[in-house]
Amino acid sequence: MALAPPPNVLVRTPIYRIVHIDCLDTIVQRDALHAPSCVPDDGLPYVGIHATETQRDRGGKIVTCAPGGIVRDYVGFYFGPRSPMLLRIHTGRNVRQVHQSNIIYLVSTAQMIQEDGLGFVFTDRHSLARVAAFHNCLDELDMVDFPIAYAERWNTSAAAPERQEKKQAEFLVHRSLPWPLIRGIGVLNETTKQRVSETLDRHPEVHRPRILRKPSWYY
Image (cartoon, rainbow, N blue to C red; front, top):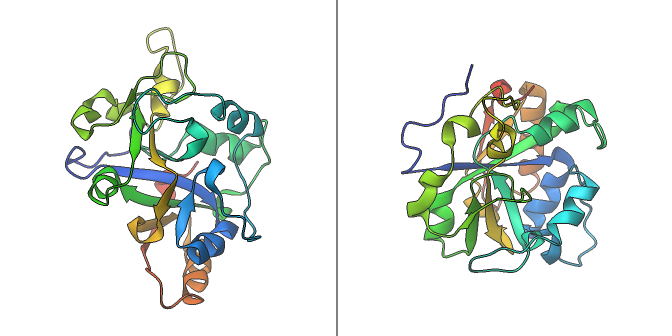
């Protein structure tokens, strides 16, 4: 079974980032999402949900095309929901377990990033994979295996040994992404939707994305 990819995936290509709901207030106050190496020294709280060793390894992975640098210089998005990382967070496998109702999706599109003049790269699989290829031209988006990016089942097998790596193909935004480029917030249920709405209500003057209840994006 697969989650349905958008039919115009190469016209408007959604990109998905998962964050803890408690980070939303900080992101809105900063009016941007920041790469790990570019976080402002403003004292605002941020709840990390990703694996410590993965973040360490991203600090040593060179981006092989412009704008260059290392992967920690980028804000990471996936090309589809239900990532292996979300499953790890859900089950607590080698990371701090977090109930999925506390995880939200921030959704933009690859084309919006380009139109705003931001630096970006994308990969055909997890950026830390040994054979990951980096690209910086949206004309090369066909390098991403979108059926796998949207697949509900992504386990590897003898017939598909690269499936899990390709499920985690990444769109990486250099340094920071302005909050107004987030066009949607995906949530598990109505309770989380209400929490997101209340957080945004505390900042009435800033951009307010649509809040979408998307249980199919969760495990």
